[in-house]
Amino acid sequence: MPSDFVIKTGDMIQIKIPPPVIVPAIQAPVPLTGTSTDVQVNNQFVCLQGDELPNALRGPLPYTAPPFVTPGTGTLTLTLLPANLTIQSSNGKKILIKGQMFTATFTVQAPAMQPTPGGPVPDPVAVKPGTAQFITTNATVYAG
Image 1 (cartoon, rainbow, N blue to C red):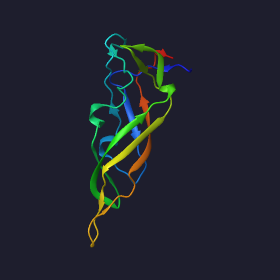
Image 2: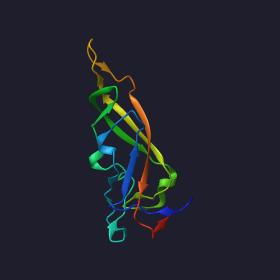
Image 3: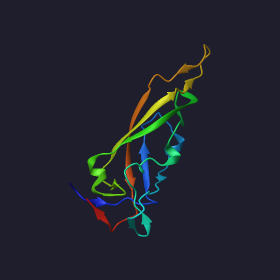
């Protein structure tokens, strides 16, 4: 199991759902908040399994997918890889590490609509796959 940098409060998650899908909430990296109460890196609590999806991204989130320009909503799910988690734990949960890119899935709840003279047409794609990765400012503390 390769070791990698520990993810902590203030580090970011970057989620990309490929065009034409536009989810405004994920256009820029989103900061993470670690819920560990006993492990710190650089005076910041580390992030545990479950911290990878910040509250700001716990949908439903608005989206468009031109030509479906009337916003719809959906939810994000993230599928971590073993390379994103430590074997060790804190508070009974595994610690997040930078690891490699992993899967993000945007699942439509209410489809975005394309306005047409005959009435709105819904976005037919209900599941939109993408990628996610952690961005850390920690360059000193490794875990495996």
